[in-house]
Length: 276
Image 1 (cartoon, rainbow, N blue to C red):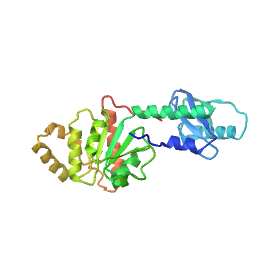
Image 2 (image 1 turned 180 degrees about the vertical axis):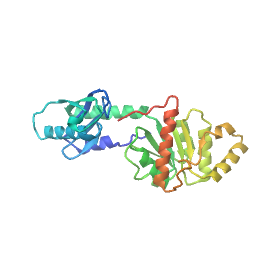
Image 3 (image 1 turned 45 degrees about the vertical axis):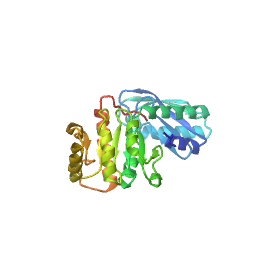
Image 4 (image 1 turned 60 degrees about the vertical axis):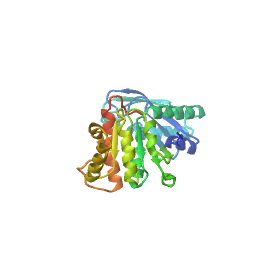
C-alpha cells in the first residue's frame, strides 16, 4: 500500500525554521492533553494545543524565539481569568527548536499512529466519495479510496491512500478488523459485489452503501436469493447518512456519514480513536 504524503510532512518540507510547542504537563481541566503539540513558523502554524488565549500566547512566544530573542523554553500557564480562559486547570508548555532529528521523530510518530488508527475504506471516488474523503481527512483515521477508474483518484486530500484496481472487492480482505467500509461506486452491480464480500466478514465496525430504500430492498432480495444470511444483511447501513436530514448534496451526505462512522468506531469493542 503506498505511503501517502501527509499534511505534517508537507508542512515540515515547506517551513525551514520551526518551533515545536508541546503540552508538557496538564493539570485539572485543560483544552488539550499532555503530549499534544503544534508547530509554529514565522508565518504559519500546524496542529493545536487547544486554541484560545493559551495558544495565542504560545504562538507569540514561539515567534519571538524564531526572531532571535532569548526566552524561557518552558511556560507554566494557569488557565484562569488572568489570561481570559475559564478552564480552571494549569498547563506547562515546552518550546523546542524543530531540528532535523525532531522532524524525523515527528514523521515516525505520525506513521506509527496511522498504523494503529481505525481504517476507513471508501470504494468509489465520485462526488460523494471525494466529499467523504475530504470530511474524514482531518480525523485520526487511516483513509483508503479504492477505484476502478484511476483518473478519478486525482486531487484526493493529503494523507489519503489511493488504490486503483480492476478488482475492488478483493481489497475487502485487506481491511483490518474494526475497519469501516463505505461503498459508493458508479455501478450498482459492483456495489452489491463489494457489499457481499464485506458482509461475509463479522469483524468490521461499519459497512455502509450509498443508495435508497428501494436499493436496499433490491439488494436484500438478491443477497438472500444467493444464499446470503439475512442476519448478516442487517449489518449493512443503507442508505448511509441516516434519514433525518433529507439533503442529497455530497458534502451533506459526507458529513452525516462521517458522524455515523465515528459512532460505529466508538461502539466497536476494540475500536479507539487516537492521534493529534
